[in-house]
Image (cartoon, rainbow over all chains, first blue to last red; front, side, top):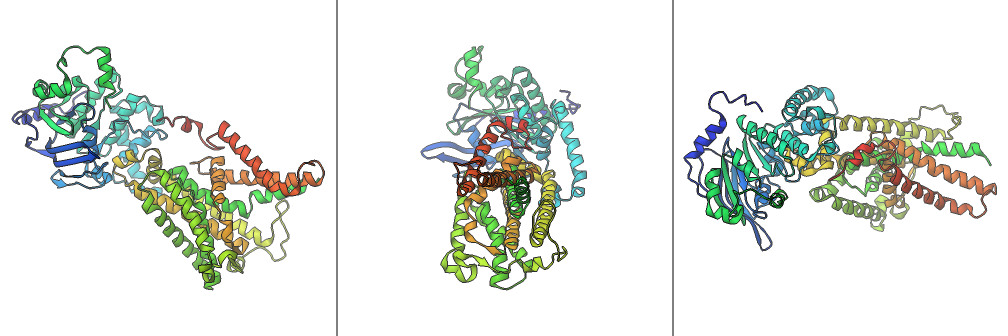
Length: 299
Length: 329
């Protein structure tokens, strides 16, 4: 992936430099947060799935959310994006309180997510999947839809944008194929490309690497980095520690619904609590095949 | 045995008034179920709403038929809102349960003795319901019959306007499903959460699909009332909805021409087997059946044919098998 924007100081270096002065303690304030959550609580019966006191996500950086299975990472994603309702709590996006807003409104504000189990729309073509991602389409109103001349020119622009993204994600040869005919990894790519169609400010990726082969992983990593280079903030859930270490500027660790640690990847991976709760004592030795399989299917 | 009679009767029914009513209901279902994935099992309630709007406005209140059409559209919209608002936020199955119950509630309410003065009770509303429409008949007064299709002058005019309605609604559906609106609706059918995550208000789109499909079905009800000059509550049984589904699946769901092809074939086969068996029994070819069995036997045959269709061509006649095979989640 060519880094066209990396002429002066790249955004990766900027993000690293800004976050360097931030102490690695749970709930620490960031210089320029895009997302700030307070007292977010979600219980399922007697089980406390998420209980986050305070967390801030730095704008323009790649933040990883890690933790053992059942730590509440996906639930936290669902709560923040409005797909699940909190018991209590409040959060702001771009300084604007957004708790309790419908998920489609949050997406329109610029907070777009992907899903752990990829939601490519199988019986629609790749290009139609992409077109769906575009915002503010005139032709999506039922009355305007009847008159193609009202939306044809906008549709052309959307197609151009979609083709650019598909080329970037190496899916341009699949334009007319049904999304259901793509491989698992390609569906992940499509979902990510589709999320970018709306030009979001914050992209939330739920396990973007799950079930993706190593070769494709490399290009996915490149894509995520290039998203940051364009100024988009990335928050992602992931189990693959190599990947987390490679691309994230900041790591937040959850266990049993709470944030137990955060900080730059190197610092977090040496944190005793994190090793104890998640990484295991031998996390930096080579994984056996069975160990790999265990981290791969972590749901 | 009179083959000519069998053919004439069969052809006449395959594109006749009843077929038109069912095709309109199936076009509505195609919007709701075929494109938006809404399992509406109460389509007959929308048809009934259309019929009753005509009956009540024209007979009970002695007002214009054209006003009745406007009222039918409004009533169908209100019915869709009543059914949709509480259920469309829930999983698809709930809509199915609510709609089938609501359609029976609707029928039992309109036939109840409590509203006999307005709605006619169990006898329904009978009289010159469609007179205003039949007065516009441009066909010559001495019109006898078409060569093959045996309609009266009055029925032929209903059939002509009925097919114009079918053409108009088919065009509307065609325009809609190839627009960005149709794209969103199809996306909701595939995976609602994915579409919501892209900033679309799925609830509103589902409600729009339910209303539009309901209005199209209500036009079926209007045609019914005008053609038969009567509105009978007990004709609006749940099996109407299931025949409309049969037509839709036969032609191919989510195909613009599916309801038309399915409707013609459905009525061709149903009428054809009926007429054929009737004639065959009369001619003494079949001696183990009574003429009174014919009505039921043809449904047995139809059902067997449907099972065969689902086994050998589940996508319907127009459907794309490729699309079905991909539905792996």
